[in-house]
Image (cartoon, rainbow, N blue to C red; front, side, top):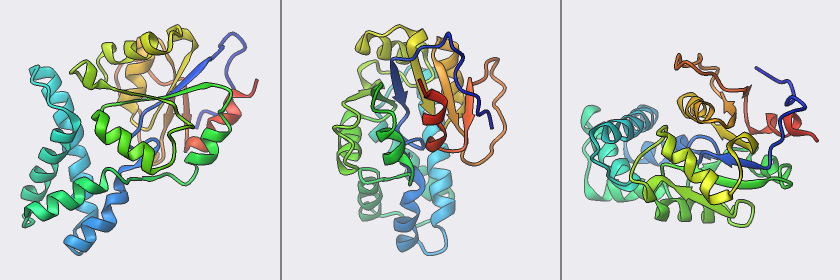
Length: 230
């Protein structure tokens, strides 16, 4: 893991966080999946998430945008069909509701509290209503006052226009913005745009070969505040 502090010539005014998988544990749905289909919860959660991301990329390439709520439901239906799980409307409703109540990672609250000197924001593929619910249910409304959704652009990350939304909203130059994501491709996209990037690599995954690399790699969010000591 990269643990060096920022170089003296890097001055960050704002820190922007991806939501799903970075602040919120998308696999906290496994418990509910297990209740509905015992023994299949982990497999369903993994496939659901993989297909969810795939659909964002494919729809962006096809220029056939649908918001993240629709994509999340469509990818759930596909995952259930692929795993041959009987999927009724009540199952869909229960699991879509879980996405509004995702657990934060254990270190999320303390890490955000330690970063209170920065402008904090979320930049997410999530639909506005989904984000409002999950942020509110986690009690992060006041901690992170700015929550940005790609929905206003009708395109998904890592399109550069999504990262430009942060610059336009916060009125901070790209060089003074730090971006935090658990998705390597997202951190690479933000780095390519011009942000200082932090990849939260909880699982020890290999680097994506995308022509750019994140500036810093940490095991979890707790690794970020020590890098930003002023």
